[in-house]
Image (cartoon, rainbow, N blue to C red):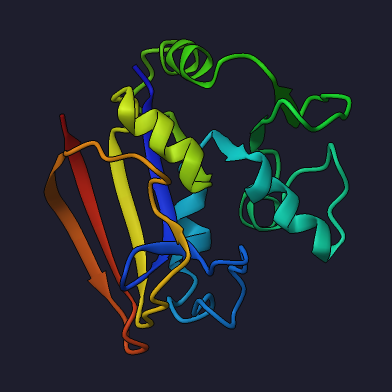
Length: 187
C-alpha cells in the first residue's frame, strides 16, 4: 500500500494558515531550511490538495487546471489531485479535479500499487487532512514547525477530534528556529 504523508508547514500552535487563510512568508519561514523542503518533495509521486489550498495559488497567477507553483517548482511532473465539489475545470494529465468521495478515492489511490518507494503528499488543507485522519488514511506526519504563535487560524486537522498516538522517527532543526519532526501515526 502506498504511504500517505501529511507534510505541511505549521505554527508552534499548530495552525497551517492564519484565520484569513494566509500562509505566506509573513507567517512561515519558507527559505530557512537550506532547501530541504524542496528536496524532500521529490520523494512523492502525487500530491493531494483541498480546494482552498489549491485556490491559494490563484493570487500568485495560478490558473485552474495548472499544477501548483510550489509543487511544480520542487517536482515538475508531480500528479495533482484537487478535491472540490465547487470548482470547475478540465482535468488533464498533471491535474485531476476529484469530485467523488475523498475517503473512497484516497483508499483506492493508496491501494494502486504495493511499490514501497511511492508516496503521496498531502499538502493541505486542514479539513481534507481531518477527513483522512478520521478514516485512518494518513500514515506519516511531517511538520515544518515555525517559531511563531498565531493564537488562531486554520487548524492542522480542521475540525477532527480524533485521538492518535505518534512515534517520532526523525527530527531536524535549523538556525532559524524551525524544527521538522517526522512521526509515524499509530491508530
